[in-house]
Image 1 (spheres, rainbow, N blue to C red):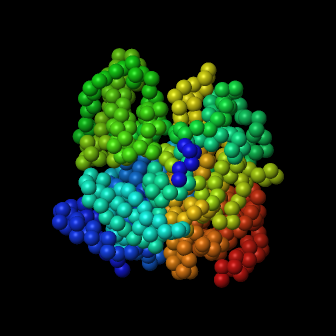
Image 2: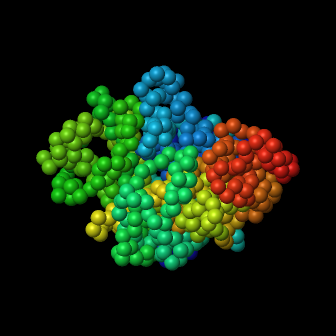
Image 3: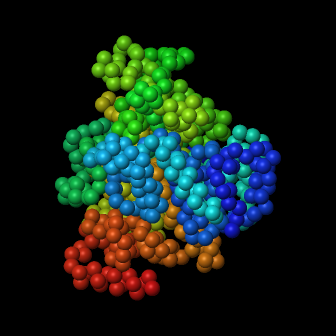
Length: 591
């Protein structure tokens, strides 16, 4: 229930299933219904793709279901950049896709080309590897198509779950743009939607909105107003600040302080703002001008933010990360798809109207008009959807109430050290700062919009426990995307690199569970962590050792880091003898 607000068939070509006629589609659907898969993954988000591909590579039969015919989630809908503060390797499939993007631009345009240069990580800001959505969609399709054990079913959404005790037995699907229904059977199911759409069907507990400050004792929980400041908060000591600045992570400037008494910390059912990640181009041969929209109202448009841009993307493009309609977006999360599409339409209409406003309204300063007038929609992006991204950026949907809940405390140093609490069942790292966009409209005095926070200096690299992905009362249902975290902690883990890591870890876990003949929730977590360490997963962020050079020492650091071996971000392994001793301990366990 919802807490109050709180070898199988291989479709040889992705194009083939998109182009199937009505009779053939029925035959394909019947073939899917006749089988029982090892794993059914709902939604080909990056986390879903990583989950499906990893499970398939480990020998499992996988059904991958997606609402649209376009794979890759927000990566294929305009995100344009990897949101991560960590430049290095993280997990095999994330590393593979990220490198494939770089390789595409280098091979297609040349190593000295502007396209390749613009795909690489910049020196600062939100520029950690950039890409066009059409390119990443192509690469994700190719990644899935290479796996003969993955059956792809597009154009379907989940509508019902059949449970028996602590198991899901089957999942009913319906055509997104039609009435045909099918029932699919699998040993394990993974909800990889951005919205958490399988959770209510499976009747597992989940949350929507914000916890109160009192519930978990989180300093930044609930209703909150923050003001930017150049002075560090008193809660951050000089020693901690210096240690934070030594982290080998991308840094962002500035601090924020809580505005009192208006920041009540009260919980509510509200989530942070959405928007489209619109792709614009200044290439006149690839540009579609923006017409004056119907119901054009400059008075409203003047109130909307517009200044968040990812640039440059390859091929004379930019990614526009605004505007946001704070308030109307709240209807999306638990709405049906008719409601959701109404919310999406409102955001797209506002996006096009604001772009026209910036280009033509006399109240816009001339230098800003001159900048925006250069841009239009890109002809070669989302051509089958009116050049509108296939998905809106859902920053926060439902969140599982799992066997463990990640909180702000899991992102803050423990007393006596700099590292946040470690978890013996860690399957991924968190590296982003606690980051929430506006939640409700309104400001007080010199504050940001209510709920907006960017805790750059207060957030430290943490670990994500396997238990956060596990519902309390189901043993064969995993939630790798909308997993168990508070609203504050969610701001640090709501990123595609994180979800690709949790998704791939889930694929490994399900394969191990099949080998051990247990449901995934009963899998020995130590066996999972050992496996992930051997497979080059970054489980413990350290300044001096990462997973760029696979081997016993790297594996040992990742494993023992989940046991609290390193209270700070320096391992202290400064001599060969110390490294050899750690490796011997690891080999005694791993062998």
